[in-house]
Each structure stands twice: as C-alpha cells, then as structure tokens.
Length: 184
Length: 387
Image (cartoon, rainbow over the protein chains, first blue to last red):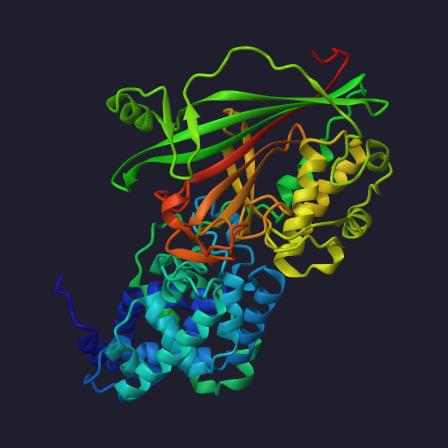
C-alpha cells in the first residue's frame, strides 16, 4: 500500500473522515506514552482523545506548512497545559512522599525495571516549580529527545526563547540534584 | 550525573508505547466523553469525537473474536506479597536458641577498565545464637571469594586463576579460606537496634502501633554525619525516615528473635511505607525462590557508622521474601546510577584534604541493575547448642 504522507491524509480526511484514523495509528502511541509520563495513565486516555478530537475538528486549519506531528503535539501541549496545576500537585506529592502518583497501578506490573531513579523525588520538586512552557520544553527535550527546532515548532516559540527556557529549567534541575559539587 | 540523564531515568515505567489498536479500542469503548470534557466542550466536538472514534475503529483491523483489549495481567495490589507473607509468618515453637546465619556479599570489579574486567564476590558469614535467657554468642567466618558469574569465572581463569586479588580500595580478596568453623564468642547484652529480646517481645502487633513505637527508637540514623547525633526516627522526614524504619524492620524480620505477631506487623508496616514496590518473582543469591520488594536508596552504607559519604552511585534495595513461608530470604542492592566522578571529603585525621573517587569504588564498572551487595538470611529456633 502506498504510504501517504501525514499532510496528504489530513487533506483526504476533509472529504473522508475515516482517513484520519491512520493519523491516530501513526501518532497516538508515542503521544500517549508521553502524556502518560507527564500526567499518569489515568488522564492519558482522555487527553489523547481530546487532542485527536480537537485536531480532527480543526483539520481544515492545518495548512501543511508545518509537520503534522508538531501541529498535533502543539494541540496536545495546550490540553496538557490545562492540567498544569494537577501536574504540579502530582510532582509535589511525589517529592513529599517518595511515591509517584503518576505511576499509580503501573509500577507493580513492571518487574524488569532497572532504574530506581533515586533522585526522582528531588527532580519532581524542581519540576513542580517550573512554568507550564518551561516544563514542556525540558520534558520534550529529555523524554522525547526532540531537537530545539522541533520543540520551538511545537511550542510555537522562537528558537532563542526555547533555548533560554531549557537553560533556565536545566539550572533549576541541576540545583535539585545532590552532590552539586561533583566534578564528574 | 547530568540533570538530563536524571530526568531520562524518571518514570521510565510509563514511557512504553501501547499499540494503536488497544488505544483506539480504549477510546471507542468509552460510552461518552468523561464528564469534565462534556461540560466544557461544545456539542459539535462530541460529533467530531464520535467521528474520530468511528474512524479509528474503522482504521484498525481486529481479529473478529476479540471484542475488547486484553486486560493487563492480574494486578497485585501494592504490598500484596508483603501481606501474604504477614499472614504466613512461621509460628514454630520457640526452642532453646534462636540461631541466625547471615552471609554478607559484596561484588568487586577486578581490572582497570570497564571493557576488560571481571567481578568477584567477597563473602562473610555471621552466625548468632541467642538463648532464651538472653545469653548470646556469635561467630564470623571468611568464606572464599569467588567469581560472580560464569562469564566472570572464565575471565578469572584466563587471568591464571589467581589465589588472591587486590581491589582498588587496598583490600585483598582470597579465593581460598581456612576450612574450620570459628568458635562462637560470647557477646554480652545482645541487642537489636538497642532493643533486648525482652523488649522485642513487648512490641505492638498492630502495624500502625508498631510503626509508632519504632518511630520513638533512638539511634544514630544518619547514613553519614561528622558527629554522632542520637535522635528518634520520628525526627527524620521523607526518605531518611523510610530508610531507618525499613532497616529496623529488616532486622526484626531477618535477625532478631522477634515474636511471630510482631513479624506479621512488620511486614504490614513495610507495605505502607512510601517508595516500597512489589517487583515480581526472583531467586535470592542462595537460589531460593521469592518475590522482590524494592526501595530506592541514595546510599546503601549502614546507618550511623560513617562520618563522610562512601559511595558515588545510587541504589535500589530489593528485599526478597518468601510470601508462602513468611520469611525474609535476602536483601540485594542493585546499582541504579553507577558511580561517576568524585566528591570532596572533609579532611582526615592528618588534616589533609581527601577526595572520594569513582576509581576506588567496588562497583565502578557496574551497569544499572547489576548487584553491588547482598545479604542472605537463615533463621531457626533450635535446641542444638552453639559450638
């Protein structure tokens, strides 16, 4: 079967809504995993559904000049931002208790985890102090391994602003780690 | 460690991607969008959602006999294995002596670089007998060091099967040890974290009350501190408090002549501690089957003994329990982040500056998830007198 580009599918979906399902197949797994990591499995299904519903509703606005992925992730970012305070509360609870609310019901299933991430509660405390955009910028970098340019496209910000945000976030996170004077 | 690396290690259990079919089914199975969306989103988007769901369902091809995604494997409630262990604590009639045998192992890297090294396990065995009237004796025995894995054994043999090796901290490990049982030396006033067997017997048997009693326990609970500070566990917050409580619980379960009802309460208390996770089936270093319970630790050094840090990595401590027998079989420390770099230490006795460097760490070539140290436990009531 001919592999259509995302933009072609979006265009086709204006006449044939079922074509949009292919975009879900292509993009939902990674987006869902990222949202899970930010807000936990309980919210992830809803947020991904809302993101695709919004994208489908606004598909006429997608002009094909940007990557569809960046456009979709931008929409997801707006939906995630609506849960900014909820996310902050979860990070704070993690920092306070050592139990990550986002991992509720998940960790027990994963018997092969090797990374205990002993620093995670400290990082969570620092993440709780970041603004919505700073937090998104640093997590897109760390968890999704995206480039500064891709992050700028998703957040719809100039490249220089993204660099400044990531620098600021990294400084805060570094201070949260123990042994700041480690010279290694 | 770099802060980005640290972030990457956070919530890795959530980062795996699910198949689009399963995600589409979960989106489609929901009868209506959740209330929060329904209130906020205008009606048109419901139609769009419906269209989207129809589209995604049409787009995925499913085996006809599947009408819903496979539910995740039966999910153990947190603490489940601990609660099973609590229900199964042994109630053997107490004998004349409570005898425990503990093997303490540490894994050392031998070699000068990560690519070309092998790992050796040093082992010490500690035997303790505690009589019913409080008299006690103990014996320590050096067990021969041995290569850690089959691969390490081959590497050691290629190196000419040396009878002894030096490790960077200056110690020497011997692959042969005298084959005689050491005498049991009397120890006066046998105590477990300051508690006599009589006090152990009086501990509460209800988990919350046990925890409360242990929080009042005075001791030096810092992993390292320039000065000794005696304080109750209650004075600690967060991770240090969990570490101290879990250390005491470990001693109650593995080493002390603790009454069965207090053991059961200790298991239940452990299940409530933040950060404690059930991990799944495993075998302990003696090959016994059990379930791993884990707790992240910044350092695994014993509490109250050090004036300065001694480690540069971070760790995850696994408790291996036998739920059916209600016993704590072993503890195993896995490297979470390998040691790297160095750290300034306070000046030593000679007043000269000191540094802690990764080059002297036994686990300097460990990868995350590899074992850095362990202890195995066996305990029984016996009428056989110590040798």
